[in-house]
Image 1 (cartoon, protein in one colour):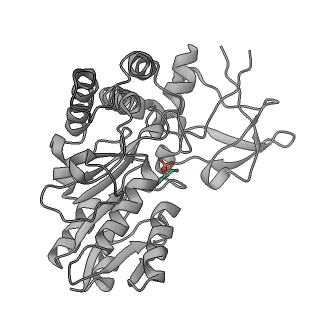
Image 2 (image 1 turned 90 degrees about the horizontal axis):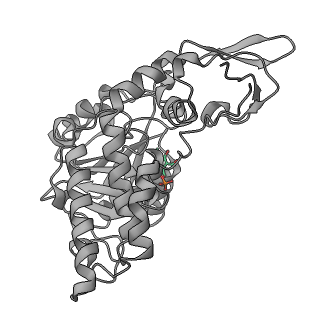
Length: 338
Ligand SMILES: Cc1ncc(COP(=O)(O)O)c(C=O)c1O
């Protein structure tokens, strides 16, 4: 029996069925605007408060430090622009050359209107070394932004080490953890980050919702002007269903993290064949590509009744499109054996 395998979980993931079920009442029945003062708003307001507490616990934050956004892109824009446009004396930003466009293009936008930005190079394994940051940083730096896990090659950075250097120079530290939250343990206190971006659809939550963690006491400009939602920091009527769905998905992923990551590591042992005629191995997947395959095992195999250990990667007629490095390369190679 042959089946299609979706292996671009770095681009987006399948919605957790429990998250989907939990969202329905907020779409269909309890559609009150959470920010209104009347009784129809009480339940959505309570649901949002509960979801905020669940999410905060998953990353060891306090609930007041979680701000809901429309996803990773908005969270990154807010962190970069909110920091540059704040009224502090220092406005220089340091980021890396291998960030997602949500960070790179936000930095370029601030640069165009006069805020200086430096772009740190990575080493051959995609690491941003603390000593590289040490060379670039100065006391004029207001923000350092380096991603936790890379969306193309999965390199996981030494975030605590980088944050340490930023703080030693009086700068804030932001990390785009969109590819990490829900896949590897994230503890904002242990990492000592001031801001952290996350996006629900990368951890089996709905698309179009995410959050920005902002440590208590950190000053960044509100990104969306308008109503007083999110403690006057992010205007816009709350998406109760999506917020609830995101909290369930993150809770489930966090609870299952150890099993999932063991399964994914085992996938790293398999070889990928590009040319089914010659069956030449073109890539041996390394454990570093862990995030690339995040959830692939769980969402695509166990949900369809195949434990990851039973997946055999071998020649077959099916094409499979990988994201990241492999996205230009249709690989005809995958099948599941019963
Ligand atoms: C590292 C990283 N940052 C930010 C984003 C943007 O997130 P969203 O799709 O929620 O806007 C992505 C999405 O691919 C990503 O991989």
